[in-house]
Length: 366
Image (cartoon, rainbow, N blue to C red; front, side, top):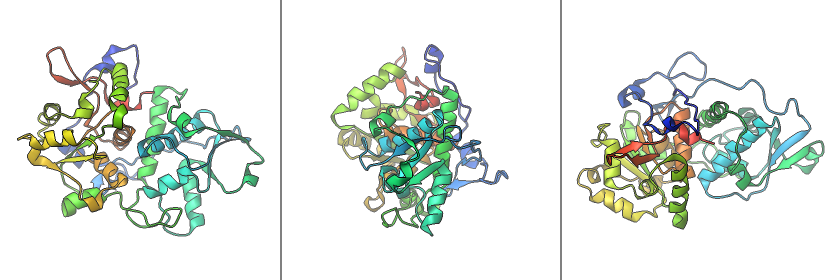
């Protein structure tokens, strides 16, 4: 994925996104493995670029007396927001050269092991792995905080945090953090911090495609209405990116068709994921004679946030809602893992044709 730097003054960033490789070529691409020997790496038996790059040193080495602490159990918003809050905490730590501390049992330690880094053996070894993976320090008692100048940020402030790094540095670090997560995705083994069994991140893929999971060609549509504020949020995104202020919520058949037909993806399954609120949009897609026969849903027993997320991340084509942080997290993950064909920022041109108006890297726009 050739990272493109956004320039808000440059109207060219609203052009159609870069020419991406053919879907079949991407599925056959040999990705780097964790040992850097050019062997393929996989998620749910599907190729993914898990990368090898590690940043040279952990934050705080030049500022050892300060600590950004994630504590408490209160979070702002749903899971997409919460994941972004954690990624932004990592970013704040790096931007300000401050050690990141996570209170044992806090929201961050409850969130991540449900999907990544489940506890599969000795807990002390797991804690050491958790700390190494993200350059963080697990804090168990208040006594450990006495030697620090502690910085605390509300989760809403973390969500809204704007990095002072260049776009290129910001997006590069965020992608590395995402690859670290997916290097440790859960497969149904192990437990959470509270001792509950974890679920398989591949559950949705396996439930739909079974033994063909590795080779299945499919698209994912993320339908997210965002309750009563959806159109308001999307309108704000529209003012910033130029995307249509309604299309990504309504997901009308002509909108979907203009994406999938040129890619010859209307002959393959179209998986719909979402929160179940946008019944009208689902019915429109089902009623369409061309799209309807390809619509499939994840079996109820396999539906959960992690499984839905991975379905989107590992799909051949992803169509999401840029007003949704869950869609945004999926799109960011796809770019971090070397996946193209993300469609979030679309609008009609002067001839009435749907076009991408803000390219792939817009999902990292600060």
